[in-house]
Length: 128
Image 1: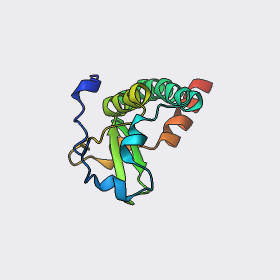
Image 2: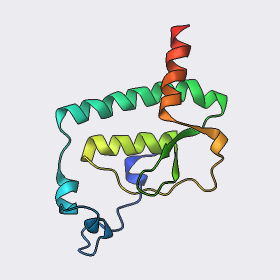
Image 3: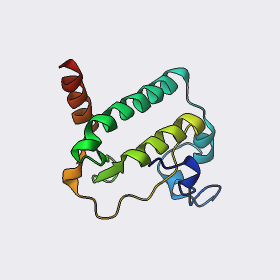
Image 4: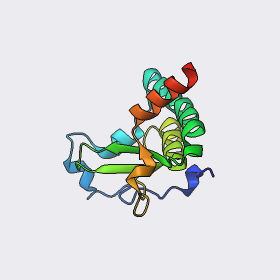
């Protein structure tokens, strides 16, 4: 199942002068949203989308639902299903930023692996 970009929820603070994200940095949040990706960033996102397709093809049949990321901002783990991560990366490619998203409800940590695990698994599997 692919989650369409349009299915992602809108930024609840879009255009809001009281956006709490403004307090986190010295730059205007709206200006940051409008900044396009440079060529190197764009190439990285395209490469990540390709890697993601390989990771999902190899790991989803083994019961892995997606990727877990350690968030530096809140010191918690964030769980991203394959479809949501793909939609988020595509949005980053198309718009230069990602909208906030709703995390999975009560995820089973055993069903998610890190990006580094995915890369190692793919490297080992494809080397055989």
